Structure formats: C-alpha cells, structure tokens
Image 1 (cartoon, rainbow, N blue to C red):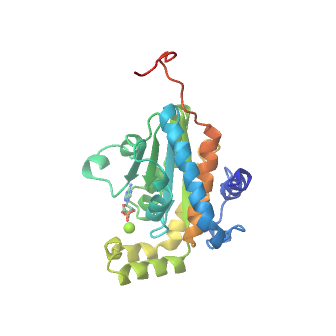
Image 2 (image 1 turned 90 degrees about the vertical axis):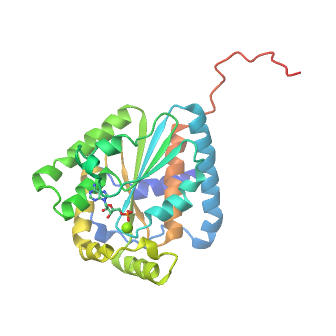
Image 3 (image 1 turned 60 degrees about the horizontal axis):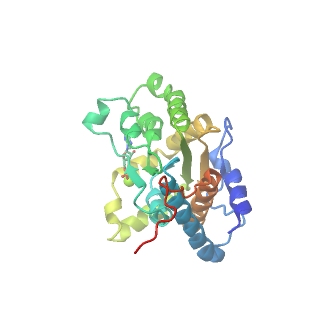
Length: 274
Ligand code: AMP
Ligand code: MG
C-alpha cells in the first residue's frame, strides 16, 4: 500500500476552501488511474490498515474522529459503511443515520441531535447524513425560510471548529453519482425483491429536484470545506473506486494522527506469573 498514492488521491479529491466548485465539471465515473482488477487486492490492504489504525486509536483514547457521509439518494452512503467502515471494530465506533427530525428534535436547534452523536476520546463516529441536511433537503423543500438556512453555513463552520478545537478530526465525503447512475440503482432496487425495501416512491419526487440538490450541494461544498474540516468529492459511479478512495483518504488521515498503543499507567516491572 503506497502512502504517497493515497495522499495524492486525498489532495486531488479535496475541495480547496472557497473554491467555486461546479459538480458538472467533475466526472462521477473518474477513477484517477486506478484499476478495478488491482482494487481487489488494494481494498483489502486498505481495510487492514484501517483496522490496525483504529485498534491503536481506541487503545490510545486520545483522538476523536468524525466521518460525515453525504450524497444524493442512491449515491452509496450505506454501501460505503458496509464495505469500508466494516474495517472498524464495532467497539469504539458509532454509526448514526439521520432521518427526518422527530418532534422532539424539531423542538430544538438543528445541531442539538447532531452534537450528541459526535465522537468521544478514542472513538470514530460515522454520520450517515448529517447536519448538512439542514442546508440541503431543508433548503430544497423550503422547510425553513432562506434567512434561516442561509445563516447555517457559518453556524456549521463554527460548530465544526468547536469540535476540532476539542480534539476532533473531521472528514467529510460527498459521494457524487450522475442521474443515469441513480436511475439504474433505483431500477435495481425496484427489480430486486431483496432491495425493494430501500425504495420509496418519494425518491422519484426527490429525483425531479436533482438540479436543486446539485445547487445546494455546491454551495455547501464551497462554503463549508475548511482547512480544519475539509470536504472530499468522491466520484462514486463505480463502487470499487468509491470504496478505494474512501479507504485511502481515511487511512491517510488516520496515519496523520499517528495513534499509538499507550504505555501502562501502572508499574509492571518484575511481575512474574506463577
Ligand atoms: P434515508 O437516508 O433513505 O434513510 O432517508 C432519510 C430521509 O431523512 C431523507 O429523505 C432525508 O432527506 C431526510 N432527512 C434527514 N435529515 C433531515 C432534516 N434535517 N430535515 C428534513 N429531512 C431530513
Ligand atoms: Mg432513501
């Protein structure tokens, strides 16, 4: 596993803060010179590396890691958790899928439910959707007035800055597929009885608002990719590349933290078992 190659991919896919990103310019089928056949070997290597890094991270009880997954319906958020995050020991790892807010959640500010699920020391917290829904679906459907949602980019940056100041490393992935790929995936969900549970007729209504979602994502990526909490745009039409890219970026990010098994806090010298 080449660290240099992972780092290069991380740099390539990172949204530079303030970039006026146009998703139409990013090919969701891009593979950046990676190869599907080789990925059959590279992905398991990448996953082993993640397993080892998380083992040390959990033992050390020092760093906190927050992974945010966003993407249009059927972009592969669930699949990424299944195929990449499965490298992590469930002990020390949490997954939260953010749904339509409940009554009690709506009675609070939008970050209330999110803050509770952020990682503690040694933990990795995975967000399947996140506080970003409050500038995405909420904006597209006018669930709150523009004066309210437009302030949220700054609020989100302040919130993430707070988490980072408290020792959290934040990695945000936007999984980017195109409309044709979404159509195929929806059709597959409809045709396969084992996948039908994932399909809601509402998905078709959302699909009609594709352009509105793209515009909302573009603004969120532009305004909320920061040096302390960067966004990565993952070309996600090809699942094997999506998995490889996420594993590489996570691996490189966790390597930077250099987690280490801690020494014992007791004096163990001379202890012999009888
Ligand atoms: P799924 O990810 O398919 O389980 O669906 C979850 C649904 O919850 C999606 O349609 C999201 O748009 C919706 N959702 C998540 N967060 C919010 C939010 N803050 N406000 C409104 N809808 C939300
Ligand atoms: Mg859904």
